Length: 175
Image (cartoon, rainbow, N blue to C red; front, side, top):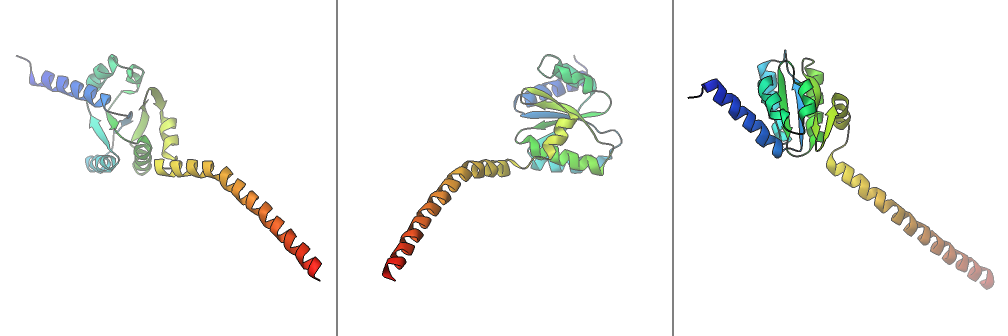
């Protein structure tokens, strides 16, 4: 019969592996010195962005990452670490993490994994400064619409100048 601790570690490892499959990104944070109520408020904030904080033993996380594409992240797992699994948009989660780490200096961003790319702390901080997905889409639509609008305005001005010129000729002939 297996010991309870071993069963718990195996269940945690399986949970990490299964959650990785459905996650768009994974961030690693060090939370040493952050009070429990503050971590609970961080968890609530992350839930709004379709993300979750999972605290696990380092050995379990290393085993879960060992046979996956996350193996280079094993070096970041040292000391009290938490894994943040992001299911939807990583920009909102990175913004929430950076805001929280400014208020609670004990929380340290270590790096992570975004789609198929390993990212560093600086990448997470850069993502936090990006606008939301809807704003980016609006900017793309505006950029695509701008040349067409410019062409329409230019053609309208040519036509207006032509009509103005004809009106001036008409007034000159009638006087």
